[in-house]
Length: 253
Image (tube, rainbow, N blue to C red; front, side, top):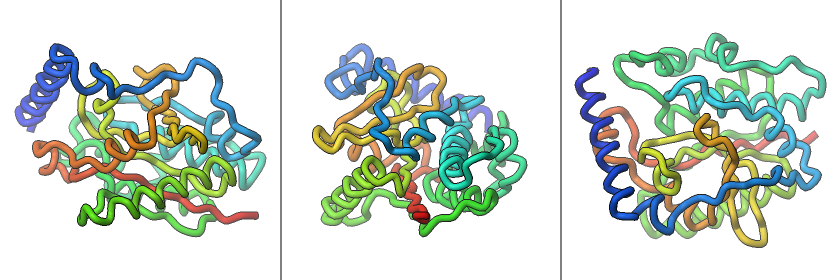
């Protein structure tokens, strides 16, 4: 299993250096724009809470843990007011869905690390239930099987991003190819969406990767491309087929 992981890592590093030498990918035109100023919350309490409780992942596999902890603490602040925030260790001990804790370890769960999109959706729902959070629905949205459905999928996503930004009644967790627009490996990554500019269409990502010291924004079209792209063939044996997002619609008090 370690040999297979070594081979896969070598593949992604070769791909990274090819992009660097050829000036393609994130070394070309498709790259994120880092945000120097504090993200404007626009009076949105859920967005403000998400920024407040944003944390970085504790190891290279734990982007899902940092993301879900950030989301759970943000919603709990909005719904409950005074509360004791949880940390990444707390949630792994409490939520056992999908052998989450084991998948975050160095050896993984039978060699499988991180979370594919469908399992991420299950764990998000289990986490909300575990901490008594009220919600209307948790929906996992992957790449459409029929290319003709892409327009409908992206239109719905834009509407949901707008609702997050203007109404604060929902949240979006992105499962995307990080190296498509950042100078990083082209591997699946998870982080919460932190903002959406309804005028320009720019999407703000609150990246939980500790190497990303600042939040960044990307155009909506780029966001859709990296969100709904198919992952590398070498990852399919680990359950990674495509990116997508988990949509959480909250109860409105």
